[in-house]
Amino acid sequence: MPPAPLSLDLNLLYALDALLQERNVTRAGERLGLSQPSMSAALARLRRHFGDVLLERVGSRYALTPLAVELAPRVTEAVHLVHDAFRPDEAFDPTTSTRDVVVVTSDYVQAVLGPSLVRLLGEEAPNMRLHFNALLPEHVANPADVLRISDVIIMPRGFLTGLPSASLWQDRWVCISWTGSPVIPAELTAADLVTFSWVSTFGEGTAFTPAAKQLQFLGLDRRSDVHTDSFLTLPRLVIGGDRLALVQERLLSAGVDVSQLAVHEVPARIPPLIEAMWWHESRDDRAALWVRNLLKRAAAQVERVWP
Image (cartoon, rainbow, N blue to C red; front, side, top):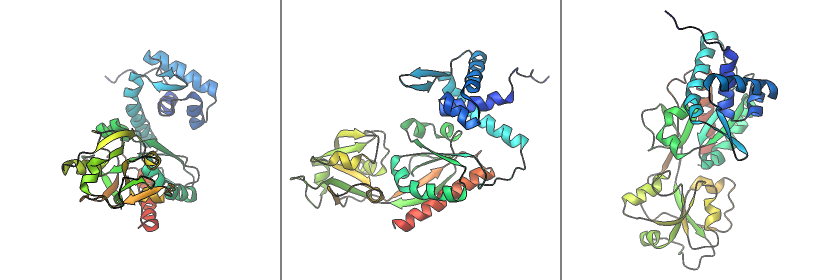
């Protein structure tokens, strides 16, 4: 015997998906073309159904409850399945589509890839919306869950396995320091890498920087006393002190002020950075394929601008 139908209409599924992704009643309503009172009414019905507030205020913003976190990837996947079931032969037209493009990545990728991607999207899909979501350590630990509600994760090779992927571009690692430092030499030695303090990204142990991990393998254990979750802030944080930082070379050509920075070759054999994108194997519809092709073309422009 088939299960009894729920006393909920299909529109609530779309409302729930928008609320869990936007975490804001007003933005969720704008996404669906609904007024704030209508969206608030939908949230009230969903709260009664689940017996959970789903969105709870934390300071000046809303956060997902534990149940909502668990529901989010399942709800988004259900929305895609419903869409495919009712419109199996729908042709995807980027010129008229209002689809959201969700890219989970670092601020380095946003700075390097963003301009080309935004330009191509504006030229070919003016009604689509691009969302850059910050790459977090938990995303690396559970990439499949993130990719059920995102188009791609972009990060260096060497961390994710078991998912479809494609390489986008290469970059090389360089060391930077403040030009005013009286003690850091123009040409670094391996001994300098362990003598001076460092500004590092994401803290030791998270291993978001393959080059830092490679230095550990070589026995060059750096002493980091400043940590940041942003690659873009690294150059600013070395200015005025005697610290080193490890950055992607392209970052220094992506609008970063280098007037007070000395750029050094890394005195160790470090493989080049290979930036790649990963996606969920269920994302094989026309729109998802088009988005990944767009990312590849934007990455090709990155290679041409900064060979």
